[in-house]
Every structure is written in structure tokens, then in C-alpha cells.
Image (cartoon, rainbow, N blue to C red; front, side, top):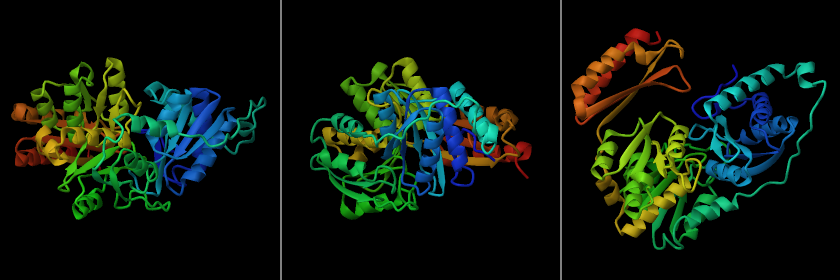
Length: 449
């Protein structure tokens, strides 16, 4: 079955679900909807990347647009290039997934995520083109249009310069850090940027071989980074995912600093320095209750959106705000970027550490107290089942019992037949018991046999 757009583009098992035919059909559809005479393509380090890039290029050129390859670069660098050249773009990456998976993420001209209606139009067209592949009439129209060219490789050096220039020269001088590049897209450029800012950099996850991306390293596997930071006595560690659009930090004691704490540290600092527009930060509904309490105590307003950094970006743009992100580590510094940027976020975070003369461990512990959070999935009989509605009464009873001491979030997965249940409460045992109650209710009502 052909993959469909999920939370962030197409994603699937390379050469099985996400095939060359899919990439070619998607390339043609993307040009038809997004337009433009030039299309940019970047990728991470997966072995399947060149195959999918070649097919995507063929589809784009068959629709009359030129292709400018950017090579192995982070997703935010592709978004920057799309904004710089006012061109549509694609990033070939499955982010934090294992190497066997891959994905294609599209950006509209200007480096912006696609609107829902645009995404739906591209999906419908790509499925039509996919169905016509191999059909003589479908593959050879009576009136073929112009054929695009493959241009010389393009540069994203301007993105490098933007990230470096976002803080003062030498801002990280004397700081010892470990960078985990996940054997992914930032394996070259990430260390270089931090070294240019004066940091003493130790790298792990910096030797991609096409198969080791995210393998025991990166933002979803911080254990190796935690150990290395403690081993060498570094001030901090930064872990990116495969395409470097998210960041998870580690303090000098080897403890994880997640996206909520990173956002909290930046928000408090930016509010104090006048950089936090309207004294407001944007997060998703997944952000911890402790984050909301901490921001209220600091006099900072919080806007919550649906899960997904594109929803965060939409809220930032709609309200003209400067900072937002997700607990998972996608952070958008809107005055500098159009998407989550792990490298930029790392630079901004360590700049706060350097200017405050306080270790990251202290800043992270002082900015918020995490409320115990329990996350579980219930497999549904079908993606078409409204699991949230099925247990709405149970959820309402739990929330009434919690009052201001906790909250419940029940939502469908964007890519799988799963119901995601999140329960928070100041007492962990209470959260666990409530989550078990909701899992049982959902399993009985709409769970897969």
C-alpha cells in the first residue's frame, strides 16, 4: 500500500512502502501544486537516500522544474535555503526512525510547512500519478511539457552563518561540550558551528555508514551522550536526531534536559532580555503541566496547540510570536528560522548558560518541576475508530477527580491505528492508576483483538 501523508510528510520502509515509484510520483505532484522553476532537495545519511533522491528528481524534472541538490544537510538548512531562494524544497529523511525507514518532507516556497489543504492536494495527485506509472498513456502524455534540469549542487553556507551569528562571536569560549550527531545529517556541520563559537567539542555519533543513523545514539537514545559527558567532565551535551531538527540536552551531571526545560530556559531568558514577543511561548498539548505552572509563576503566557511543530509554527505566525516548540525537542526560534532547528537551539541554550555563568544543571532544575507523566498506547481495531469519543465519559470523570492537580490528554496517532493516552498528576501513583483505568476502558470499547 502506498504511504499517505502523516504527521510530517511521507514515511515508510524504504524500497517497500516508500519506493522509487512513490518518490517519482510525489515529485511530479509537488511541482504541480507548489509550482516554481526550481526545487531544492536535501537528505540525511541513510543508504536509501540517493535512490529516493534520484527518483524524486526524475519526478520533479518530468513536471518541468529544475532540481538543485543540497547534499547531506540538516532539515533546517533545507528550510533556510527554501526561504533564501523562495523555492519549494524536499528533505529526504525519516528523522529519528531506524535506518531501514525513510521519508520525504516537503516545504512550500519560503521554507514553510504545508497547509492541510495543500498537503491533501499533493497527496491526491501523487496517488493518481502513482497509479499511472507503467501505463503508456499515463506515462507519455499527448502534449508533454518542458523537462527540468539537474543543476549543480547548491550551498547552505548561509544557514551556517546565520546560526553562528545568532550569538556574540566566541560566545561559547572555554565551554566543554559533547555533541551526539546521531550518525545523521549534522555529522559534519554541527561540530564545526560549535567549534567556531569557541567550544571545546567532543563528538559521538559522527561516523555515518548508511546504516547506523540513530542506532543507539541521537536524541531518542541519549544514554551514550549521558555517559560521555560524565566520563570527560564536560559542561553539557547536545543530542540531535537524524535530520537535526530537534534537540535533547544533557547537563554536566549526565541528566537529560528535555524540550520543555529547554523552552523554559530560553523563555525566561528571552523575557528578561526583551526578546520574547508579547511575553508568550507556544507549546503543544504534550508539554508537561509543570511547564505551564512554571511559566505562570514567571509571568509568561503559554499558548497550546495540537501536536506537531507545524501547528506551533502556525500559532507563532498567526500571533507574531518569537518562541515555541515541543517537549520532544523541536524548538522554533521564529525570528531566525521557519522550522525546528536542533543546532540553532543548542547554540541558543548554551549561550544562556555562558551568559548566566550558571551550569546547565542549575538552570534546568530551577526553571520547572516536572509533574509525573504517564504515556501509553492502545491499539485500535481501525484508524477510522474515534477512540477518544469512546472513552469521553471516563476521561471527564478522571479530570473532575484531578481538579488542578493533574490533566488527561487522549488523542489518535497521526500515522498508526493507535490511541495515545497521557495522564499527569502531582502524585505518580494516582497518574498510573488513572492511566490504567483509561487503557482498560479503551481496550474494552475499541481495542484491537
